[in-house]
Image (tube, rainbow, N blue to C red; front, side, top):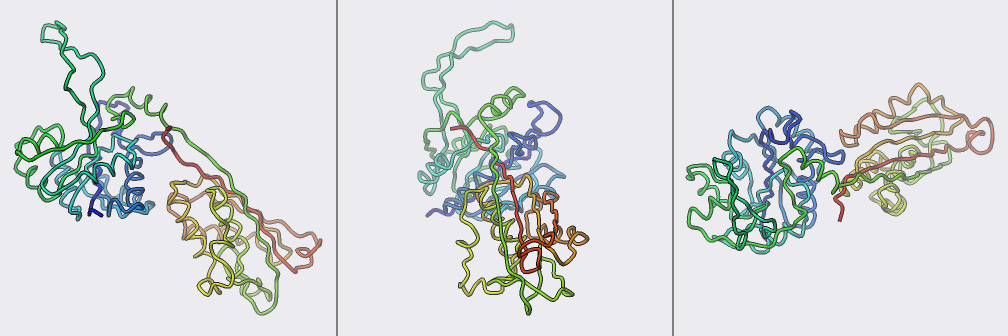
Length: 386
């Protein structure tokens, strides 16, 4: 397996795309444009095709980018770019640690892992690799007087990113290049180093102009799913009463269970896992496994959220109802929300809603023999259309 760093160049001003804000921070299907490339790096990392990601951001934006990067499973190092692309790429390469580097424009959101891995497979010492697609449009040239003439397209190819190179060699080439190269392949070839190619992908478009965002939106969609969670535990003497990660030490009963028996957290876990199409907590964290004996359910929630995030899901909303006769829970609901949010991704903050209902003296709950909790979770993610 080759040792590869994935470098995302997101330091440009993006003025041609309009709307004032740099294009890499504009949303595509609800996701910031640069995050589409970070998600591609995350997939490559999970498949063993990239060891890390380096994100090159514009001046003044690195602190906020570092906070947002924490939600990704791939290690992301954020560095500040320069006034020109060449300087930004150099900063990214110097922060990377891999033997090889894939340099990718944040303005190309639809990179497939297959294309990236075909570049990695073609890499070898002393040789760069770039993706190319044949030019299919009829080409025209216009002179200063506005006179149009035809230009042959035979033998012409359009270059895409990512472009792949031995990292140290590319640093040396870019550091000595006079500037003006339109991509790293141009500087590499100008220095006399051999350059190979793989077939690029038509869907790997670059967003440059305002109308490109409309095209990209037509190639993406936002998918939502809802999951249901349910849990019930008996109340018994000699156990702590912990609900939503909050302990109620003055209550004489607690939950019977292999873990701490936190029915609220368990139901929230199952609702998240269900929405993501994953196994329930009984399967993932089985009773009888010593690793989970007496464990804080907040640790299970943290792991469940990590699993959900690894599949690129974002949380839209969790709604839970706790059904308990005693103790009085209403004044502590905000503490439960806070405890759960501490183990969830920062981007999920403010998206948990709790309610509590009495058992009304009916059944096991009403006689204070059990507590029941129901939860629903809505997740969403942005996907490229096939």
